[in-house]
Amino acid sequence: MSIKIFVPCDSVALALGANEVAVALGLQARQRGLDIELVRNSSRGMFWLEPLVEVQTKTGRVAYGPVAPEDVTGLLDAQFQIGADHPLKQGLTEELAFLKQQERLTFARMGVTDPLSLADFETHEGFAGLRQALSLSASDVVQQVLDSGLRGRGGAAFPAGIKWKTVAAAQAPQKYIVCNADEGDSGTYSDRMTMEGDPFMLIEGMTIAALATGATQGYVYIRSEYPHAIATMRAAIIKATAAGFLGADILKSGKTFFLEVRKAAGAYVCGEETAMLESIEGKRGVVRAKPPIPALKGLFGQPTVINNVITLASVPIILARGADFYKNYGVGRSHGTLPFQLTGNVKHGGLIEQAFGITLRQLMFDFGGGSASGHPIKAVQVGGPLGAYVPERYWDVPMDYEAYAAVGITVGHGGIVVHDDTADLSRLARYAMEFCAIESCGKCTPCRIGSTRGVEVIDRLKRGENPAQQEMLLRDLCDTMLHGSLCAMGGLTPNPVLSALNYYPQDFGLAAPVAEAA
Image (cartoon, rainbow, N blue to C red):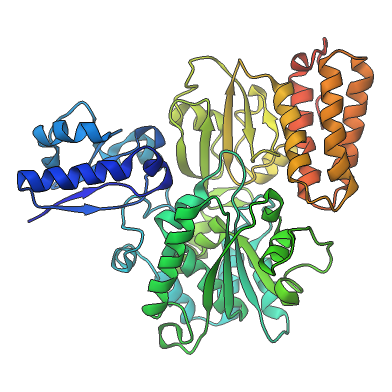
């Protein structure tokens, strides 16, 4: 009987030498006459241990990491293939505290299966949600999503079921499902992990959305910097189509849904849904004025469901296990789980799927182990490059859309970037303005010109040129961007700037603390 060894094919693991480890294992196994089955699984999300090599034993999978190619000889000498002790041995994978404390629903298969194995996927509840959807009416599928309380995981947190219901009710000759996979926020990678590590889950979620709304064509708009995700999704679509889970007659139901990948244009603003639609249509990525909303007049002028990867990937388990099962996770109006992505100056960075209600302090210390530098943590940016910098006074606020909004913070896509006490928040605020100036589509003045003037004002403030006047000017400028920008690009740029100014005034050379934002 062959020995099953798992080496991840996730981009992070590949960047850290996973392919070289796999080659070394295969070569040495042949030289030693060992019968091994090498499975390229996805990452478990414990990035400080990558490449994480797992061995299937009678007691479960045993993890070793981080493994370098030069470690392979010593591992085989120690007989790690039967779970023997070695300095790199981490123990039974499922018992590792970082994983054991999580509530993995969307990421339940991550690291367990071969991403492109339909057999693996179906063995672990894959397509159960699609089969259930096919047994229901379209309106019942929409109702399941509504009852689950699922909200968009891309940042706006709009109820997914309402979008679906709007598109389902629209009368049109053609409808579309578009997955926004243009994941460009700093410190985020859950979309990439999903597409590389469990692509059939996204395909299943999009197909269920199509059945619910009457759409027959779908697009996955993937950022150009994700070549492995693009390749994996394309391969998965081909396999799913060949097996009857996509195409003209889904599982012999008479239902039709075709799906294809579109490579993104490389612009951050194309993560905004209407700019993305322009890009898919072959145009320059410029934000559209709303109304009309995309649900009524979206891609090629037709009714279109637009959700991000994690939103659509959350749908299969809702259909498979029922709306109540999913709704019972979370707090308040924030139902289900969110894959939090912990990065920056933190000892144990990685993906943590937890129900809403967990706190930043728990994420940073119980999971992350504190700062990597050993210095005190000073600020945490939540929600991407346009998210607020959160001071310690809010680290115990439950992670919940409404609770965060009440203190001026957005959960966003679940990206969390940690900064220790050496960080200069004025430089980070300047970066936010500069980032906006570079990435703006240029259509509206508050975003295009406001961000450029913002950089100049912060520079003058840092030089000490009439600080009180510059501070007032910066706040007025942020107010104009917040209320006058056409989309969230300019509208959210004030978040990091004002939070840095409010909570860390000393970094701007301001002597006295200023009033906190409401």
